[in-house]
Length: 402
Picture 1 (cartoon, rainbow, N blue to C red):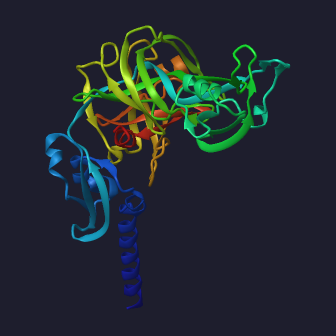
Picture 2: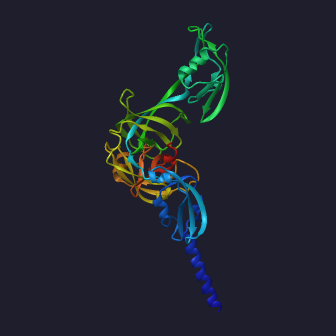
Picture 3: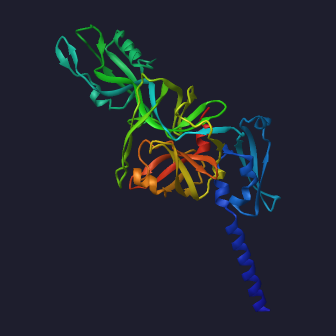
């Protein structure tokens, strides 16, 4: 009798262990509200979360049938009838996107004036410094002077030069945090007007990789992370997108991430407008797709439920033509809030390793494809190992597009 009880206990324990191991409770409970999901991903929930788990999609607005995202609720159940969690989702429509993978040039007019350096002012007493040294650093973004917004270099000069007081209260951003400082201006003997003694600019330019273009609306997403200037996220007043030419490749090595050397000219034809610079990529409207996408190549967006460890591909034009390169997804993070390090992957393709050494600067935004869907974009490289990189889930990008 005692032996029988032991066998029953061992059998029950084994069943319990198999049951628990087969259900990914931690992943289910780590899912954030508001993530992107497709009907197909919801229907196949058991393949990701365990064979005892089913998922029902409820309350989806009718707009999904018209190829536009609609809100709904996923109800996860054990054995098809025991509810274990409800998650609000954005149910993706069936829109196709054109695949990017090519470098683009980006020129931004900023909302504010970026401090570059200091300068002395020519006064009647000779060249003098103002008090700015103790307040400002290179990269600070000046947004207001004496309570008046300054969205450009010209506006900053206008507000300062027309002031009837030597005291200036300045609001600025440093590492995206608002700061205030009060300094005294001095009068330039050549103009008879006040000067702050700062070199500033109101434009930023750079290069990144196009991730996708919506086939129906021509809205695009690129980079997978923000454009920054000395750690400040650049605030966009106006932005333009240009075609970009690859001049060369600086191969990545340990502790030296390498670089894709590119060039674009702002007097070339504008390809599109940039409207948003977010922590999850830059977004805008394409006007001319020639040379940027293959209009015969489109695919669906895949939400995070499409991403699994294993074989995948990144798309890049580092060789001069758009090609797919094999990678291995090592980890798909259980993120409860948006982050640009959703996916950890390793480059497996010998062609790319021979060409670049792995992931290099300029490849941010390169599309990540798994099982025929666009599931993410490259964002960062491991500086200690350029064969490894981070990627962002495509749903973080799509949800920040509008």
